[in-house]
Amino acid sequence: MKRSNPFAVLGLADADLRLARAELSRLIDRTIRARRLTQSAAARLMGLTQPDVSDLVRGRVGRFSLERLERLLVALDMDVTIRVAPRPGAARRAAIRVEYLAHGVAKT
Image (cartoon, rainbow, N blue to C red; front, side):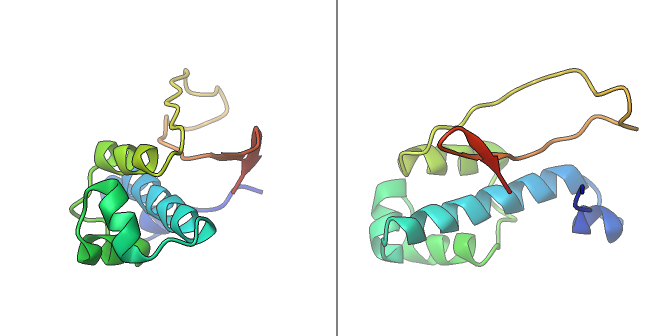
């Protein structure tokens, strides 16, 4: 079952981009927790301040670009792959999506 995009439901511009940034922020938080890092330690690894990390893990990503979030994941030793494909015929429009692979298996 496909999950709806809450940003699209609210009628916000760039809903796909907003959702992708939120998902990357969630993955940063998940990675920090899995590695049992403090926000200060995570900040040092990512070249941020602790308040920046606090914003990220709380989903406050308004000032973080998609590219910057990708670089932060790489700083946390996560591979980031960008895949570009034609819009599926059944889809009404092309979209930006984030997919997390744990041990080669897609997770949501």
